[in-house]
Image 1 (spheres, rainbow, N blue to C red):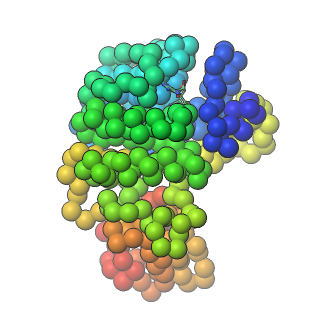
Image 2 (image 1 turned 60 degrees about the vertical axis):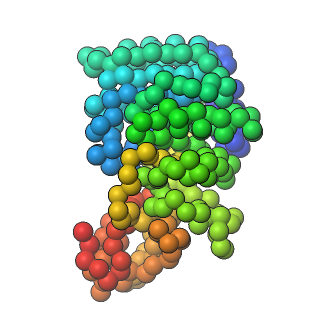
Image 3 (image 1 turned 180 degrees about the vertical axis):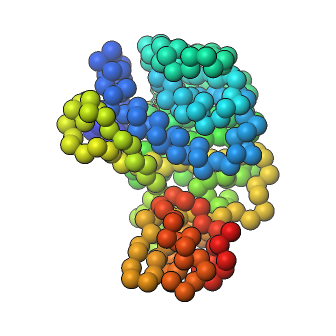
Length: 304
Ligand SMILES: C[S@@+](CC[C@H](N)C(=O)[O-])C[C@H]1O[C@@H](n2cnc3c(N)ncnc32)[C@H](O)[C@@H]1O
């Protein structure tokens, strides 16, 4: 268990190679990666997700991202999972049978090296969660470009919320922008990432989701808290036209002080720090805002 958590924390490949490590992955990491993918999909508007019928999950492992996508997209009727590990795909098949019950989804699984396949069958939604970090340097770009070529609607990449995980997302974002992708989330623009321009070069864009821990989960992880906070970095790219005005993104926990709230935002014009005071029309929106949310109002404007 601790080897898996350590590998994740230090950005090393997780080496989930035998039945014990499969079980450990399901117990230690899968609840968190599921929650992270679900949190990412919650940032994708219903008009993009509603049209999604087919899914391709690259580096699917036990199908974590597939199960999250099926929960977020009721319109999905076909899901293809790819992983180099037959054993993990088998675990996924067993989970799928238990999770899906009466839902009719056409499943396919394929054992393959996601870095060496150049052409995947097209899918409306292509997902890769916590897999880029597992690949050797130099082949990550092949996964991203092949995944993008296969994408009809949206490509979702999720990685650990560490500086290394963010760097993988940033490299993918740069490659995707060069291919003409538009970003649905978290970025409100296709320009240079403000985390890598100006004064913010040692910062990294990441978000957090709170994952409840069951008693068993606490015992296995040797923790006493009833939750854990999973940090993740992500990007969602689309071929669909981007909406005219994109909301800014709250990049940090809002700083609440007496009578004022400070928000760090990623905006179409770059990173910005704004202060909303009790007198501003945006005050109620600022009070409700959280790290990772979209932000649509300027301090003096009326909230939507
Ligand atoms: C950390 S797990 C993530 C699994 C799942 N996506 C999730 O979010 O829980 C990484 C997965 O990538 C797979 N993987 C690593 N390198 C791969 C490669 N070159 N080709 C295919 N799968 C690979 C591993 O077998 C493992 O299932």
